[in-house]
Length: 585
View 1 (cartoon, rainbow, N blue to C red):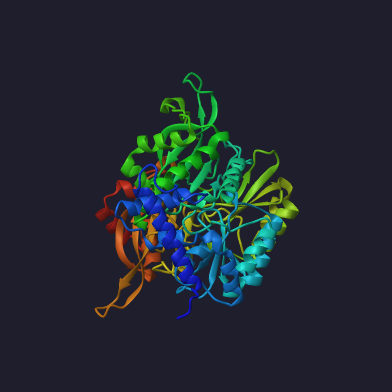
View 2 (spheres, rainbow, N blue to C red):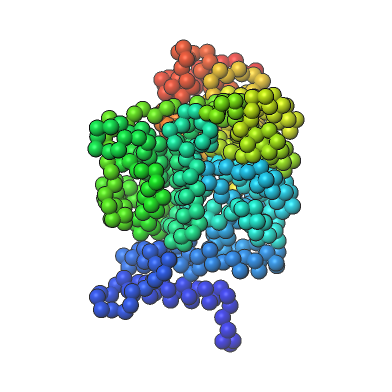
């Protein structure tokens, strides 16, 4: 028998020894062996050791991370690319640390998810991404619900060269997937919004670079989301994040310096039916990164490493309570966080649910942003280059992605608005406001995600194609189409929320794409979780059901009543009867 070990055997033995040492240290008292583990991975490894010392079993993903953290797999990832091989086993998780997702069985290819703080790109970066998508992917990119871009249809040979070319553009995909802090979102119109209290760009950017340059930020038990909302006209959905920093104006006379602060909200995860809750704490904007880092480090030490479904900040807060958790954060910081009574905070300006589409004046006189509608968030490489040309030739050179899966072009002078809109239309896109398009959001779905139960983007297109010519909406209605319980499209907060399901069509067990349909969700000051109205709808029925609900609202609402308010006012059985009674075309 050979004395040489395979690479997999070596990794297993190294992980086994590391885990055994950590457990032994956790179980021994003072004066025992030197404390291990050490280094930037110490906190996460110690948390794993404590879990085992308590007699609980780590989930497979935690064992894989202890054996080899994904950040350390780059050389093996390059070898696999040279061999034209996709990852197997735990390496599927490890490659995600570099932003590469092997999406089989949905597709035998990679998807690459980028990082861009506050969702802002330069025109030359957008053009470069278009070239990368054409050379190494499917010649298109999708805007995500975290104001980000994904490139799809990447062959096994091209994943690494794609990542390296992104770095040449000044971009990265590091930590955009797996158990990491995801893309940092902020107000899309930061710095140009006449309504905003605070420009979120510097704070999102600082946190972005902090994450990239501190390895211990990659020791989380599960993914983590952070958003900065400056109270501008386009919301950042910060209350759906693990940490939401909300710009607020604090009045004088309450023991705090008057002015603009961030209110701290924690624990948002609407896929698990919870919004981020106000902690009663305010944070000086300059301290936001320091506070966020302390919160993440407490989560690293306390998060569940045995059950992936419970390994999120919400469940630590549910178990500990906010007081205990915040005390641990303050211990990390070595200082108390300032409390602020609710009466000290002025009401926040409300977002405009149509401000991400069409032409809107900026705070800079004579300049405008144009919100470009992207059907289900997708742009071809040619469209990306065309939008980059508009930004460079007629705007300030920036393109801003939104959580509503579209793009803004900023800095367009009044004199160039009509010409810019004409060019955008020539690309097969639109700069015109559209109430149906404004709220239609879809995740990747079954055609590109192994978790998806239905073709969400196809369903969203079908809803738009069916309802658009038949209905004239005078208010936006948010229709969120998500493929699974990970809820990337946040179905619970939609006016109409759809979650993918396999729907039986006969007694032999055959199934088709389908959905459960919810109504009554909301966000911001109207935050609410939707309630299920229909179950097991075949996908082919969904557009007509949505049409019936919208017709019932238009026919029976009170003056000015929003769709969500209407569905909350009307009992479910009455609502379904009204929807069925409305004549569909």
